[in-house]
Amino acid sequence: MLRVRELESFYGGSQALFGMELGIDAGEVVTLMGRNGMGKTTTVHTIMGLMPARRGTVEFEGKRVDGLPSFRIARLGLGLVPEGRQIFPNLSVRENLIAAGANRTNRPSPWTIERVYEFFPRLAERQRNMGNQLSGGEQQMLAIGRALMTNPKLLILDEATEGLAPLIRQEIWDCLGRLKREGQAILVIDKNISHLLPLADRHHIVEKGRVVWTGSSTALAGDKDLQHRYLGV
Ligand SMILES: Nc1ncnc2c1ncn2[C@@H]1O[C@H](COP(=O)(O)OP(=O)(O)OP(=O)(O)O)[C@@H](O)[C@H]1O
Ligand SMILES: [Mg+2]
Image (cartoon, rainbow, N blue to C red):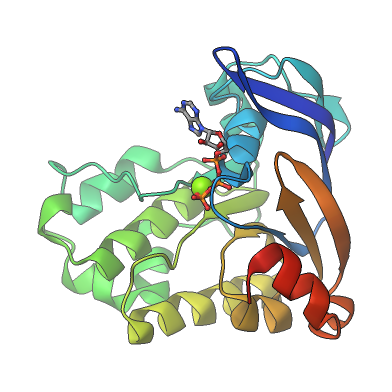
């Protein structure tokens, strides 16, 4: 579904990605893990066309997408839940969801507002509240709901549990498990290895803008030295 090869990206003169490689197949849940500042967000921003790739390629469903404007990449079926959520503060919950709604990928049973409300009952309760009146957890649910409203073939989550209370975090993990069981392909960036191990099929460990290890949950769970060296756990 998604194949990233030899990706290099820069902030001005400063290189952030040094040959990033990753791949996701349909229905897979795959992670990008690594310590702060290693290039995870830069990778998703480059995939989404929010910053240019200086070298390398991004293929989605067999077609090159690097070089396309970000709205066109999103329309092909990539849905990003960005770091820091970035919901519209001056729109209501309902308006935030409506603004995102589209079924360009012609999914047979598409995401609708009603389905998002079933998925996150709390959003239904808060539907008339403005984005800036929501708690952190509610904002995160809204950010996920908004991405689902685009009916993405691939959902990308950048630190979706960051800064949330444990109970809300658990709710987000449960929701990702349900999406996986429905066959949703997900690229998840997070630091919480104990939740990522049971959820994901494969992992990529990122160090200084490149992948230094890739493998299964079983392989990662069994390698404490690897976890310590690259994830600091
Ligand atoms: N806007 C920017 N301008 C200049 N350098 C940046 C910018 N954003 C990120 N960088 C640098 O690029 C590198 C990769 O950053 P990136 O945000 O991709 O890391 P990350 O793995 O997502 O980290 P975190 O876990 O903290 O979110 C870091 O060295 C960072 O300092
Ligand atoms: Mg980041």
